[in-house]
Amino acid sequence: MAKPPTIASLVRTATTSQEQYIINTTEMFAEHDSERIIEYFGRLSLPRTWAEEKAGEFGEEAILSARSVHIELAEMAGVTKYLERNQRKIKWHVTHPGIDGASSVALIFAAQADFAMLRIRRVLHLISNIDVLTPEDWGVARELLNRAFRDYRQTLGLVTGRWMEALMETAESHEAFVEAMAPFPSLIREKTAALEAHRDDIEKVRVSLSVQPPGYPMVKPPRYFGGDLLDNSSWGHFWGEVGKMGDGLRQQVGLGI
Image (cartoon, rainbow, N blue to C red):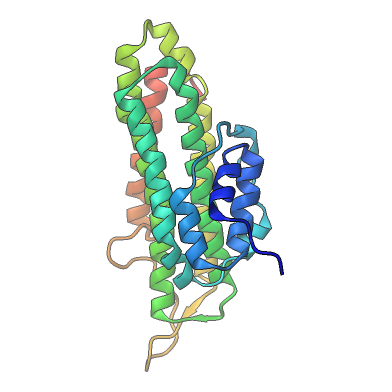
């Protein structure tokens, strides 16, 4: 049996194109080797281009390779490093704002959004194929889902807040600022709408599930526990914050979507 490619080679070739990034990441998940997956994401960087029209390009293979919510949580050790690295790149653009950096920020934002949706779809696949969950299973699944939504909100906040303000202050003219920001309103609308649709998917799956607490009858998985985003009021607050971020950007850019 041939040895799998080294992590160094996978990380290196993943930066060459969006297609190769998706291929390598999908194959990495399919290996079912948590140590290698953690190392891969701990070292992974984005490709130099990210096509907006290829949103959700991760195919079913990247979804079906998920094994359990507990393994997903363990592998978050590497995923978190990857996501935080991308956010640090946006923060670099905050301190080094420039019109020519807008496309890089758009790339990072789109990739972060698409990866959040991949994470959600993997968890949905796992819980929708279990007839009866333990309270621990549901707790971990809910935490994974909440993290995906919160990571998206944090990235969106960086883009529509500190980075946009820094770019606006340093742009040579308002016209140059508006031109650089032109792709963002539709990009944010598209990604946010897709994320909202996944929230509806979660609720559809939740009402079909059962949780079996030890020594008690089966119950439906609760939407609310510990201030997470799956209950209606918390989700409403989350959506209000996300909506304000998008509205603020549109007002500054002066573009409708």
